[in-house]
Image: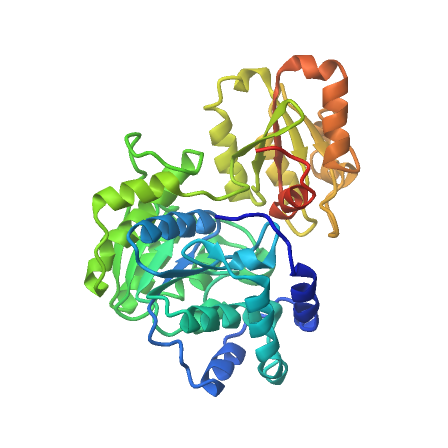
Length: 413
């Protein structure tokens, strides 16, 4: 699905950088006004909107794979990207070309400046335009941040809402409690829509059900798929994400599409989503890459490790965590008695250091080391006595960190 090429990305970056001063600015008015100025040509294409704290990208990937198998022309917008901006806009799994992306971005320069769009808003506007011009039948839109004021919510025709697991993240924008965060996310539920959700914490479930009732919507709670379902994305949590996708697909007949169970099974088995429990290697050393970057995701990764045959030997963790994340809690949930960890910077962004992490939990200091890059840690493990320990090596804490590794082509797959 994602081919990890970056042709034309510098030019795309240059155009988007003109709007970076806007930063993250959660507001719908700009996007709605820009769409109105264009005559709202995209309104008639129905969209599946995907919200949640974690699992959104996996749900989109499962949907994309199944709809492609069903020969339904599907446009997907996801974020963030791992390697290339072009990953964020795809039709039937094929990324937008750099030429097409640049053409659309250039076309919308005046609109973007007039309405002071953020880079994310400009990308979503570009996705709408690309999907419309290529006559997609259905859109799948992954929410970027929150939901209530997210650019994807400016699209008025979102009859299907998929909800992945909701937990604490982006508290500086969404609130410091699960209830506050859920209110921001559940606000996307439109009147009369169908909502498919994974199991949630009690306070999350209460908020969702209240919003569903208020908007005369319909909610279907799904349980994880059983072991007889083969999934293309690794991890037990994917059984829950796949169940959400399956629920959405089974709701499509109400909107004129039929996706049979055989197609769903095949689509789920073929789905791919890099950077999530992805197996790779550095030289002859096997690695696992996982972009867990908040407490909720760290909890899932901590549960996942218990299923690994060599788990009792301990884990070599390589942590790269952005400074605005709750680094101490992420590491506390993952670092166990027989483990050893290294803290590395996430390239080009402010990151947690060992000293700052250990201010919160001094007891971690004996298990944590520090290095200036992932490569330095891997060199150390491969060249010393530690290589004999046969511990699983996991690189985690940030999708930006993993994307940087993939961009530099340091790993084998």
